[in-house]
Length: 139
Image 1 (cartoon, rainbow, N blue to C red):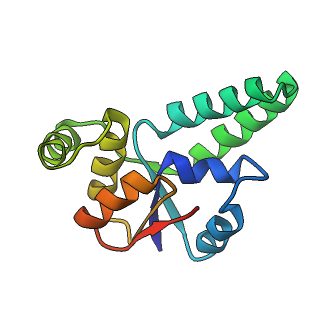
Image 2 (cartoon, one colour; image 1 turned 180 degrees about the horizontal axis):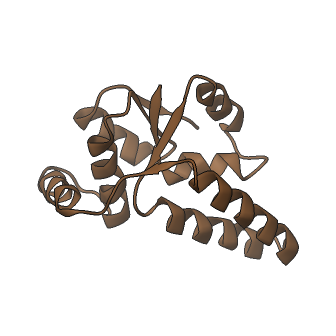
């Protein structure tokens, strides 16, 4: 099964005590392809860096985690930031109040043709459920 995974959920893979982590791993057992948006890598690296700063983790742990993320992203399919995505984003913004990066996530999910869309963002879930089929909230 192909799954589009947004940043809020993908972070659960890298943050050990994150709520919904086990639920996410259970879903992943059925997934053979993970699809992400063109901003997921940047968002994820910023989120992990901020987490390490807030909890005063060792820089060596951050380097190790970044290597794992880089390795994983070699296997993920990333939706391109192209005119099609921009046009979809524009249309979605006309219908919904969505922040820019969430708009990119939603547009990428729409383009992905994934069998399941996975998010941990309640606001994004609410809007995605109106626009897409089989949206799963993992919290």
